[in-house]
Length: 492
Length: 95
Image (cartoon, rainbow over all chains, first blue to last red; front, side):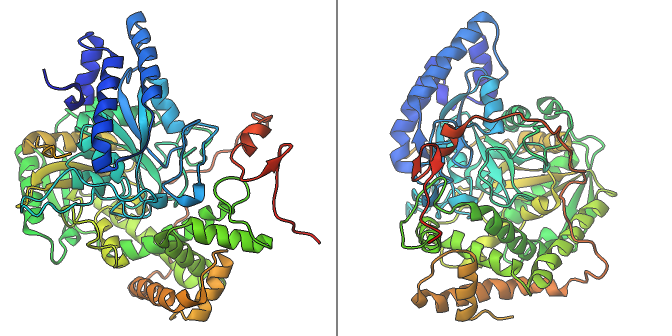
């Protein structure tokens, strides 16, 4: 039998239902795997092995009584951005100190409601600001994947949900929660050979998730397969009165949509996503993806999203502006770390200077600047107008197609330290993903090929607002047709 | 709209982040690089375009005007750097 940790979430669910193994056995296997791997990968920043066993024992009792929830006994990792009652949550920032939430985020509470088991908290870029996990207070996560050039360089798992992606790729959980503000679920999924979906803005409650840019932040899962991600997303979504932007719409049967097929669907290929200097392997994967969907009965149409190149600069006004406002709450008074001083202002200024890392400070300064008197119209208001144009591009595209197929990221995983000195180079990681955040649309990344160095590459499917089902249907076909089932070779 | 050390000092003050004098010049350089790149947005004709206020078209719901929660003083101050008798203790602000 395969090791328990190597199972997919769907297979583990069957094994638990048929009593092939118990939830406690499953949790024990993951606790051991994490203990062995974490010193090398740094995916978890808090482990909760006892809590996992306790929750698993309760799951076993419910499985025995026939009261099992749909995630009963399934061990998950939780991104450190989610508030978890009694378990430290810091958004991987020093400013949150040893913050232990006294309440639970809505998304995680729904996972526990459905029987899932918590393994610990996952590493990430500080306040989810980064694309390489290098801005974490706890140091970067190391990607389980290595280049085949023999140099043994440590690669980034991407960011900001780098811990989530690495933990799933290295079999340190059956699935993980993540969040995506500009690509933070999809880019790490692409870099680690995992599946990650950001649902429509408003599908999943933001209550209890540390806020970065409120009009862009959305939670979603990272998982081993498209089906696993659909199962998790179903649990995570649903209306929540505690988040005023949470949509009052029913959650469809996402898992059923995965095997629906693409016969008769029109798939758009946006010409603006072909960028200079894109590696040949990504060009090839994209054409392969087009061919796979055509084979499966979809019609391919060329579409144009003319404002694509303005999406990243637009994002780098809107997101820092919202962040500078959201992060004003970290004042050293009510929670988190305080640096003492002579005056109140000095306490604020020193606490924030010491508590925030350089990238977070840079974004707060940019955000404060673009919102300040005299610059608001020129920067912020203009960016929100450009954002309308970007959303309009998609609206026009939906008149011609049902979903879009693009690469997820412009490169495979890069080396730790390779881009950390150049913010704009780092920001360009999100060039294909950020448009879906600005327009509030669902997007998934599916691993579909390896490059010449043996590193995974992802394809992205973007759908209409609230049409995750079509996104899953297309992703299901890509997964099946690509036959991608390679995993990182264990070196840890 | 280039940013200089004085502007960085003012913005850092607005953001309540202490930045040492020695860092202001290099920060100005970093911010100018990013702002220079953002200038690209000036190419877009946004005449008559409404600024986006919500990613998904929806109206904000109103909740019932009812007390649904409370009595959680200890939970609220549980993570305070300093607290006493259910209050946050802050530096002296009035002489």
